[in-house]
Length: 523
Ligand code: FAD
Image (cartoon, rainbow, N blue to C red; front, side, top):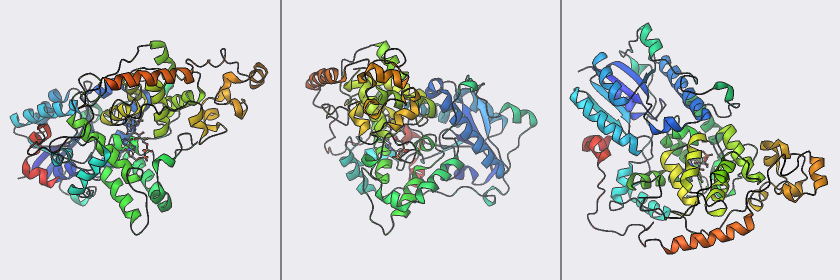
């Protein structure tokens, strides 16, 4: 029987390693590739201009690739549960395919869509390709609980084996006999939105450093994979948070919305490793992809993963609420040049190095400002091109020592930390040009410069650049004591890796509902 198919792109904005798109093409007569601009998707309301530009760029690139296959992308506006049934009828759809997405909103949305599809006689084929593994399998293999330590996680993966190989992108041959009918009217109705349409003012955009799209993702991947010594020697802690050009791959934005498949990334690294000595997880490049998987599994299995309250793995802390401190942190005016330079890079370019995230996250939470990690998470959600529901929450809990990491007495110094890799403060001078004439010895602490030096530098602290909003040496010691008190009240169960209990299988079921046993083996 020939099929009229909708392939619904959500994340997974690519043609390579897209098993759900491949499934759509089987016995397909008419293919309708769609993206739904869903005003209810929680992310959409929180996205800043750089994120929107990145997403729209990725959609344009996808449309362009589909057109080379004599198809196109339809960008549909509205709530999926409302627009999809109309499209089922209009296009006489018999099959709906999409990539599994394990965020709570997406799971609920897909459950509703699944039901509506059944009512319309539409077969639904979900496939796993946003993560390296089927996350439920990881949870099941760990006796029904997500592994909460990296070591435990690696042990579980040993029993599962390596991730599946990526599937090739569809070719002209695969598209033989497949058409994408589209009237002129539909062509404009379903066009790719502009920044204005999504409520953003293009005048406010900074120069684009990381353009969205699968082609750019693959170009970037090639660039790094062409450096075998770099790939084999990669050790995350040895990379620099304040390098003037990124010291890690910056593939995260492309992975987040699926312009790049994690499985392709994994196997390309694997191929580079062949026959060579190379670094190992957790610090290697494979190790980085496993961190991603680790947090995805934990997020799937933990209620309220992006909140402190009602989150069983999160230490309960009596964070302060100080809107002025929060605004100073967000707007890069803490008076600590290293922190402010990082927040400026984030605002302008939409990406900062992992250890730079450590610095500003520690400063906002347990280090200095004693502000809830949820507030930092919101700011990152708006500004990071790679903002990801699970990874953002998981890493914020780590940095605030709320979960996964417990050495709360190890605090990053906003003065000493940056100096380790950039003694002369070149990074600060790049992002805070106001300070560029300060001599090296004061660039991390301009308030210590004598008045004459400040005058010579053309920047008076307290007038042109803020004084530090806290006294780091004093406040960080006090905060360690507050954290100690929070830890003393912790339930012994918090953050414990599960013990082996026979028969304690994962109770989730939402994805299982979607993936029948037969389909599960084929994903
Ligand atoms: P590389 O070092 O080149 O690593 C390759 C890939 O591995 C990354 O692209 C990413 O997908 C994955 N990865 C690396 N480190 C981590 C990690 N610690 N946790 C999970 N995955 C990792 N990463 C996001 O993708 N989205 C977020 O919203 C996010 N929020 C964060 C918030 C805080 C407070 C912190 C401390 C870290 C956060 N990270 C987040 C993790 C990490 O900083 C970024 O993934 C990494 O810096 C991206 O740069 P890269 O692609 O050059 O990484």
